[in-house]
Image (tube, rainbow, N blue to C red; front, side, top):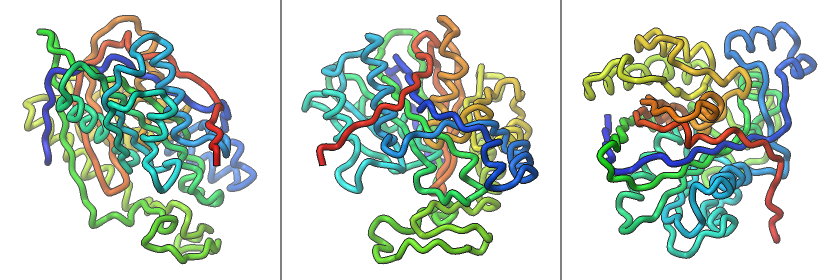
Amino acid sequence: MIQTTIKGSKISAVSVCTPSNKIPVTDFYKDFGEELVDKFSGMAGVKEIYRSKPEQTASDLGYLAAQEIFEAGKASADEIGVLVFVSQKPDYRSPATSYVLQKRLGLNHDVLCLDINLACSGFVYGLQTALALLDSVIGNKKALLITADTSYKTMSPQDRTMIMLFGDSGSAVLLEKDNSENTEDFSFACRTDGSKFKSIITPAGAFRNRDLKPIDEAWSDDIVRNDYNTHMKGMAVFEFSITSVPKLINDYFYTTGTTSENYDFFILHQANLYILKQLSRKNKIPFEKIPVSIDRFGNNSSNSIPLVLSDHYSNNGQEKLKMFVSGFGAGLSWACGSFSIDTSVILPIKVSDEFFVDEL
């Protein structure tokens, strides 16, 4: 595994934004039948999801979360020197959406902007990237990590394996340098298996398959979709999630000389409830240390981890907690890590349907 330790920084704000449109899974009875939906809900643990309006993009949700940080007085726009945006639903194929966010947030020209095309592992990869960039910047600039996705917008409405599972949200995490004596290190480990890149894929829409027509037809799993829809090989991804992911976590424990007892909570990607229970069993993590948000928000892709933080800890007052985090998904990619966070910097979840009107 690739292991990284980053010193001298801290998380000084966490903000999350969801849209207002709450969809209970029972709304899908009409599409898939009561028996199938109830079986899915029981296994995945999803009871409702939040879905953005057609005009609202991932960057809109991330922008609103970042604005909440500014409005709370946690930072000003001219203090930001690094902006990292993580999403698989950008505004445009070009330019990178981080540049759009730089303009919308009113950041000055002295800022390094970067997009990362990742989904469910994206927060952990994005956090270590933003921290590393911040560490390399001379001076007292701060970093914004924005993660967001509107996953349903590339899904077939007939895809019973995905359409009830994924919710929409965006987050912003403010990072700043901190060389005080009490500062604790950020620690990360990650792995990649590009040989399985087709396990979660949207085949068309970029430049590899430019001429494919969006023809809806039944695929080998009998689900009607087209090549512009995201396709997930469910069993392959499930097997990966309960074998490769717990192995990385155990390898991290071994390398760092820690066990589940060394962490207050395990903020894990909310893939589904059954997978969370498997990780609890295989890594000997007491399930009461794994906060669950998938029941009320679904799988929020790159935004699962900050969503859990805001959902469970935003009203905890001031308490310093040692968090273990892990995200895993498209790539295939998987990562884990640990850090300490003062719960007083975690803001309550914001709800908004606002969106940016493009001058085009």
